[in-house]
Length: 259
Length: 315
Image (cartoon, rainbow over all chains, first blue to last red; front, side):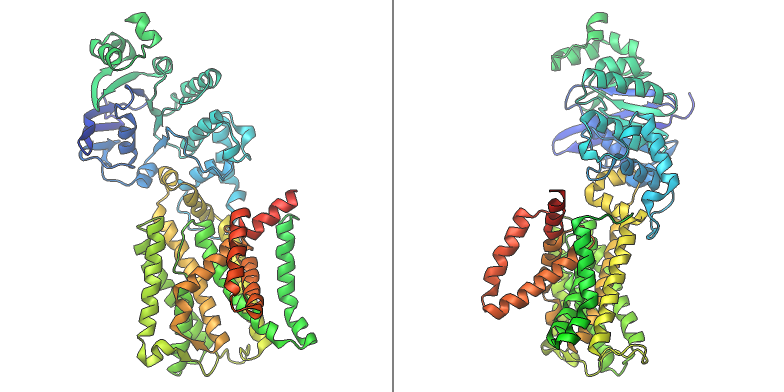
């Protein structure tokens, strides 16, 4: 295998006595969609936050395209092509949808110490924003304030914002959270499109979506990766079944069918 | 951005028109006092507008903004005392000193946020106050009288009431125009984005602190200009210019007028200072009336006077 796009090595993060990330190692190859699943409290969001630089690990290292980014601040990781969506929707609520996306495009178009021209009238930024909005199906909602968008639309906008930074690697933290059935289906369709162009790390509770989308799956339990492999392998894995059956009442439909 | 015909915009236009015509009224009615009062109002409106840039648009609650009034003022006073009467020297020095102070204070304070940011900016301003009180050579506690106003080689005579008033008004309008350009620029959108959600802005690739610091320095420099004008207005500088209550006054003007609205601070300064003047003539306990009035506006008029006017226009 070629050099992985993302390599996580022996990552450790403790909160007091709790080890939220316990010697996690993970490789994500260029072009793959790598899903991370696990019961509640398994440390998925903690892991994502360390990848994006919002949280510093206690030990271990993170490489992006072979480059050590462990100690790099979030904004520089973004410049290297790392983008994330937040589990709890985290947009600029008092801005329009287009402004949110345009700012993301602006962040990757040189510095922003420009004090005069009207940024909302810059055709380049507006075009990138409109393009990213179009990709996620929000083209006609461009001038709506984010606080007026539905929850589903906000999740779509999260994706558009991440896309506008022209990422190499997209970290999606539960993009389906809180979505209805139709909205979920639309999101899965959207991700199927996106995965052709960009490497994705997907943290998700919706097993149906995960098994439909993922090339590889890593299972996180109590901060540790207990299994990593293709969807078929994961389904067969005894330890995974035990973890899910033992700790959680949720048995996925696929898990039950194939178990 | 095309200005639309909304109630707040109309009121803003009326306020500007009123300010432009004020000397005419003063000359016709022979009321010199009103011109003196409004010169002070215009200068403090400038200071409030600069505070609004960081507080309203940038979300940085600085409780030490009056420090720049003092620094700008002392730059003029000290240079005058030492025999450098030229405004072409005094004003640039006032602006530069304010900018440097803002850079240092900002670099330290912006490591904190929320209440800590408020407290640390307050603490630095109080430090500046005590430093000024200790300047024995320049009057210490008693302040420093300026015997001659800044000299601009006959281009403009600051001792002429009307000319000085128009200079202050021109500075105010220029600063408001600049702020208007800034808030719609790339830089301005970043700063407002940071106010809204700093974590998100970092995630999409903005180094937050750098942008906030530059915004902080711009606002401080603008307020330094107000300080230089204020020193000329009163022919006097004293540590009291930067006492914390003065910083509080500026915050009240911004909140009263409408945080994060372009003309809010100007309207706030006019209303606050006119009320203060008017009420203090009625009774020496004017603060007892002013206090509840401010409370009402803050409680029921989110977005200050401009916010109220905006809701009025939407019916």
